[in-house]
Length: 81
Image (cartoon, one colour):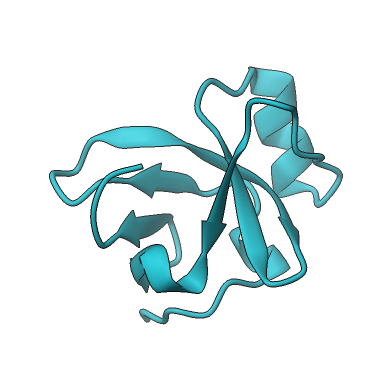
């Protein structure tokens, strides 16, 4: 299944550029915007998957227009982050 709408279900998923490079993980979804941590710790990843994550100061905001598709395992970008 693929889709383009960001929901809290995306927390903890890997984020990949168009070339397949992993650029981080979604640590929080708030106000229809995802926040990508480029270097999440194992603890941050687990918290995000449980819905307990919060975006750090270095997290990059990501809106729906930047997303090519969302699968069960990852979020694929239209370009680069």
